[in-house]
Image (cartoon, rainbow, N blue to C red; front, side, top):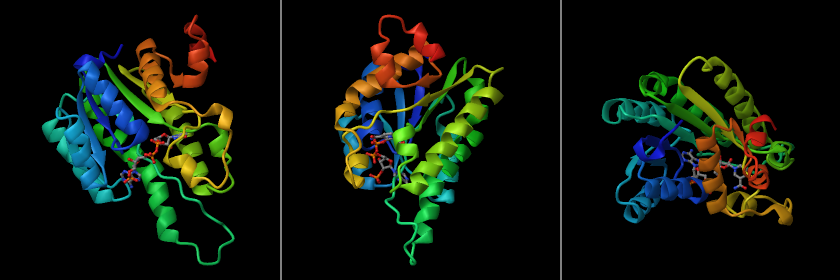
Length: 242
Ligand SMILES: NC(=O)c1ccc[n+]([C@@H]2O[C@H](COP(=O)([O-])OP(=O)(O)OC[C@H]3O[C@@H](n4cnc5c(N)ncnc54)[C@H](OP(=O)(O)O)[C@@H]3O)[C@@H](O)[C@H]2O)c1
């Protein structure tokens, strides 16, 4: 069982929307928070709003930044016990475009898939030394996994889902719990990136999504689908098997 009030939590890409809401709610609970981002002014802004947090510059698409992040955490935050892999990008890409920017594609794959895998790999020893620990991977539901205009995002999130399930199996005998969060489509940067609105009926509120996710983690639900979890309020144990 994760006690967030006694936890040290790393949140990647935590200066906007869902990531920033995790910062807000976990700060209120009393967690020690490390937030990463690739935009210094946004990191400063987050620190102004939440003075207790620690900020670290890290462009997830840059291998050296990710290595530095891991070194800094190992040196300065040995009490780390929760990683929230939130940072991600969604590119609208036309695969028939003869002059596709392959560098951009690599950046998206590295940010969404390779960086979180490296972060987890390098920080597992720290998590193992904690009494209880969690890895929380934010993936995406089917409506985004098969989203035609965002093929690289779809591929990385499908890969991230597979990786998360395998990670859970490999860490089964440890105290590290692996959670997957599948957000519904929110009214955030992602939707403004998309060419068409997916489903206006399922616009959800970021604050509710994050509070339900925290509740899901407390309850030990391995795959958290906040919408479903909300519906199952009466008997949350059902959410464990769905
Ligand atoms: N919103 C939705 O409807 C939805 C649905 C399904 C899944 N999700 C998932 O939920 C998570 C959060 O989504 P969101 O809606 O909060 O998205 P968002 O507003 O775009 O936030 C994503 C964060 O990741 C950061 N980021 C992007 N590329 C980065 C890089 N190379 N290095 C460091 N940080 C980087 C962004 O920073 P910058 O400001 O510098 O870009 C931003 O802070 C993502 O994993 C997303 O895939 C969201």
